[in-house]
Image 1: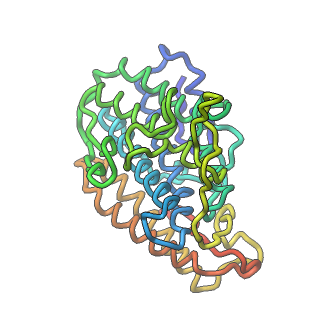
Image 2 (image 1 turned 90 degrees about the vertical axis):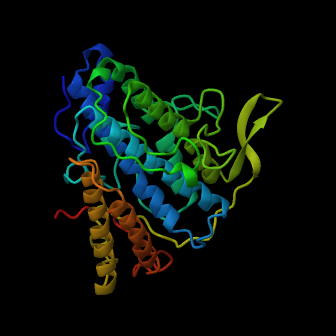
Length: 352
């Protein structure tokens, strides 16, 4: 059985997880990696929207620093999985309208069913959403269930060695993030099965921690928590501490105050033009259009980077910087219907 068409809103990951590992073919592995790429990409818009809503650009502000580090991690994870796909002869697809993220909506492939991912400024609610995205199969702090991202990656790790002979080391992008973001965060080439399994371990443990510790084993800064626990601290408003009496981790430490933010409202499906009473004026519509074009250009640039000849990744990085500036302009415009809130970037793909 193969999952076939690359549809963001399908349950293809659930289908793959329901298959016996020995029944996976080369095509199932390639399908799984493409859907993992779609998963990694799907986390960046909500996390970046929250990050860019923070008013103070000082990277030493604790919550801002935490979210910024996680966005860097997600970009690294995205690059590592792209390398996994191209090293076995697969093609990275980012600019098919069927594959791009849809907000509000569920994660691609049926992961974490019932979880609606939305775009908004940073709030306790959005941080809770982010923790739910990253939740482990068995969190150290409390119980969870469902098809998790980590479980999906474990299935890929279990199956990939069967197809190790397909690894060519071709069409690989390498980019050093570790110099400014900590060991283990570089985008590196997948030349051996050991490279692949190490990369999957980094992706899993940065998101979920280990079964013994909530600490990120590949941090940008010493003592960083894995994504799930870092986001949960922001959502709960309390630091995670180990209770010596109970022998458990609890969110019962010092307060975690939210930084000042632009009060970015939840972006409606299809963009602000679909929100009666909040239709943007000409100036705001142009800002929104500019952001969407920059985002679409970034997807094309990333697709080119992993295409034949392995183009330069720097054009995509440059566009991400432009997107941040445009988003912050958008965040400064109040909604007509409820000026307590502001517009936020739509992250809509614009076909060429």
